[in-house]
Image 1 (cartoon, rainbow, N blue to C red):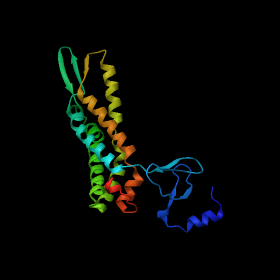
Image 2: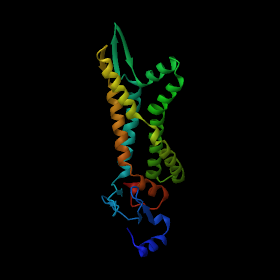
Image 3: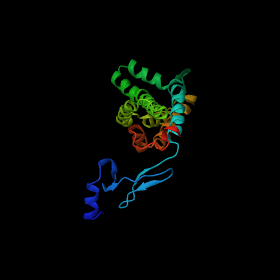
Image 4: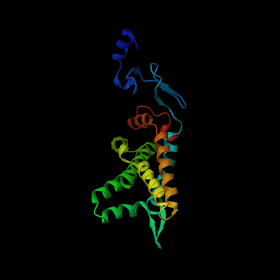
Length: 221
């Protein structure tokens, strides 16, 4: 814990030069990192942030891959169900339609937003932010879009939808002939791409690039 002199010195620094640990709330001077370095809290050891290499290039590749997987993941069959001589091909979209047609409109809207609408909006927001940094245009709009993206992060629940789908498949195996479709593989790929993107797209580097606090070739990596 910093002593009185250190606390007085920190209080005299501008806010942009300070960072607080998310675990123990220790106030620290913001370190200036280079590629591959990471900053840890000296009190609890929590990783404050790390400076990753080629953030924009790698994130753009993942965003494009996720967008390419989005359509087949939601509109190609996740599973084929054969029950009493009747065969159905179930997709995420047909699941939403089935809920709506059965009179559960509110549930259908919620499933659509969490499994299709918001994940797509998140990807489009990330694409706009990354292109804003890459092409060095519209940084102010990029800041606004990135703030919107931060508010939507908790609403995209692809992993919950995937788990519910897997549970349904396990329960249906004993009742009918179930075959897995290519849509399920695309859906898993989309989920993995989004998780990898969350890890790769370092928030503090994105904020710094959008605000112009630090370039260090980030827009050109």
